[in-house]
Length: 116
Image (tube, rainbow, N blue to C red; front, side):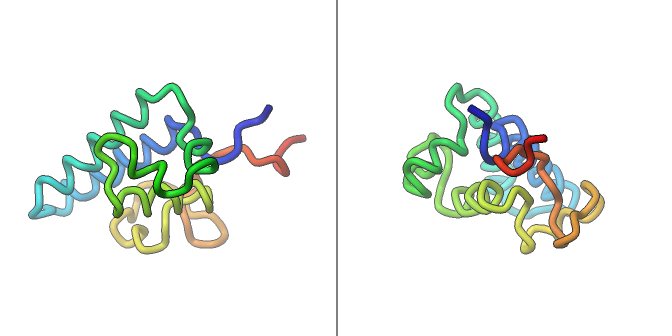
């Protein structure tokens, strides 16, 4: 069975990148930065694919994970659904990676239609 959606590593890397961008931009709320970095570490350590958890239980499954609140669940859900970081984050992520044709940053996941 092929994975659908970004891998845990890809999601964790995106969360780490967002935390790093917030730090570089001088985010005044250290808890916000900490939330992204801790969520990245938690996602990276999970045995179960977050995309599968989301597919089975939606955002409620995401908010059931340690350290994932409503806002982070929203961002992770967008990453899983679209395979790219949400447009609302792109202003903060300038320079993190090359944009795809739709203006998002591709996470490089495998979908059923991507198999050759």
